[in-house]
Every structure is written in C-alpha cells, then in structure tokens.
Image (cartoon, rainbow, N blue to C red; front, top):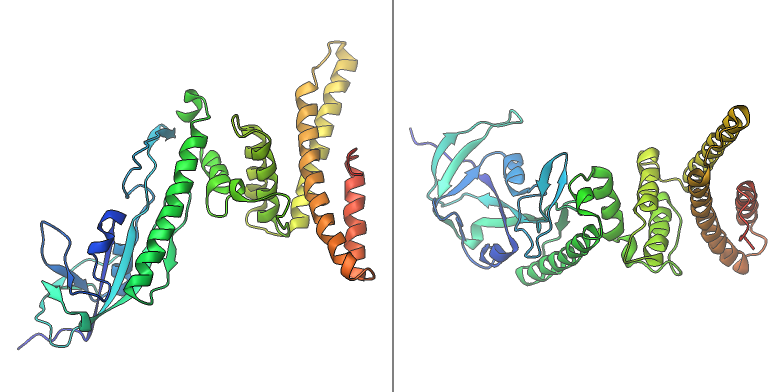
Length: 344
C-alpha cells in the first residue's frame, strides 16, 4: 500500500546574517543549506519547525570587536542574532521520501519527510524572526515580499549591531575584576541603557514620562549624560533594581511609593547609627548612607518634576481640569515629603 503524505508540512531554519541572502523567500526554489545533507527535512509538527527557527542568545556570529565577560564563572561573548524562517509547505506533486518517525517534545506527531528542493509555488514564508541576543528579545518581522523583508531584516540587524557595540564600549568602562564577576543585574541594566529604545538614545528634555519603564529610562539617561566616560554604576544598578522590585508593575505611582519607602528605610538606618553613637560614644560614619539617601531623593524628585512638567502643559490647554489639578496637588505633596530643596 502506498504511503500518502500529508497535504501540508512545515520547515524551520535559522542562519547568520551572512547567509540570509541564500534563503529562499518566494524568489527561488527552497533547498537545503546544510553542506553535509542536501535533503530538506520537513515535519508534520509546526511547533518543531518553529523551534528549529528560534535561536538562543549565544548562537550567532561573535562580533569582530570581541569583549568577554563572565557570569557565574562562565565566559560570555557578544553575538549577533540569527535570523529564523519558518515555511508552510503544500505537498501536491512533490516527490517526498518518508515518513521517518521522530521524537516530539510536545507529544504531537513528528514525522519527517525528505526532499531535495521545493518549487516556489509549493511553499509560503510563514514567519521571519530576528532571534535573541544579549540585549534584545526575539522580534517577528512582517513578511510581504522578498525585497522588503531583506531591507527590514538588515535594518534591524544593523541597529542591533550598533547597540551591541555600545554594550561592548560600556562594559569596557568596568574594571577587569568586575567584568570577570558580572551578574544578570548588570546585563539587565545594560539592556535598559543601550538595548531597544535604550536610555542612552533618548533626549531627557523632550522625553515623556508616563510609566515605570519610561521613568526608569529617563533617570538612566540623566545619570548617563552626567558622566559618559565613567558610568555611575551604583545608581544605574539602583534604578534597574526598582524595576525588579516592582515585578512587572508599570504604574508610576507604585514606583514613587517604592522610592519613598526606600528613602524612609534608609533614614531609619541612619537614625539607628546616630543612636548607637549616642549610646557608645563611638561615632558612626553616616556619610555613605547620607549620599545614598540624597541620591534616592534626587531620583524621586526628578520623576515627580517631570510628571509635573507634563501636567502643567496639560493645564495650559485646560486650566480647570479637575483630574490634572488633583494629580498636581498629590505630586507636590510627595515632593514636599522628601524635602527636595531645588523643587522651585
């Protein structure tokens, strides 16, 4: 009895940018790019095809300007992302070989069918994905035609490469001993600083603050602009730590509440140090904690003042807007709570 192939099969592949032009994108027959195996391995499981087109952070080409660092003792390099493409195959008239039964991680059928090439009329590009890298998450690039997709992919890769080279430059500002013992907190901080829509690339004066994400990027942009040659990593990490503590909550008032509670906690610690001094007579140095307190007050005040800037602009158009007036009053009270001297 003849084996009947499925009407539709699926194929996924990932390549470096240097091989992207070799891919079939509706402009030529689909062939294998594997030099050791000239057969295309199609699957009955679309999830397998999708997984085959996804790449990890460290799979692409290492940038020519190599910078190594370590996380938990493991050396890391900076890689360009790979490009993944998935195809839907219509099998009518195709000389398929198979099936070959394969394992499937999702318990769905995963039979493979082999073929040397697939004509343009028998395949469609289902998705094009720029994979993950150190700073960026995967992104799907909409596919309309081969000319546009090549333009969009190259534009995205060029942008990523600029960001990753900026990452290398910023990492280079760290002492070697620190580069040999980085944590994910540093990577997350760099992702906010020089990743997608990074704080380094925004104009603080014109930037709109209306969420936790925009507020933290605004603060980072200020600290970065203040000293681009020797980054203030302590405060940059503290800013990124607010994001972690909020666990995805993007309500800006929750950020202000968190900042204020941290200020109160630090002031309590300072008072405790003073009390110990009074009891023992041995003076405790509070200079370091005072610097931290002032830093947190500065951060909170900058966010509040930026919010007030937006509210005042709104009140120019509608000076009787009760919601804006109420919010302005709330923010001014919060500013008074932290005794910010430069608020005027």
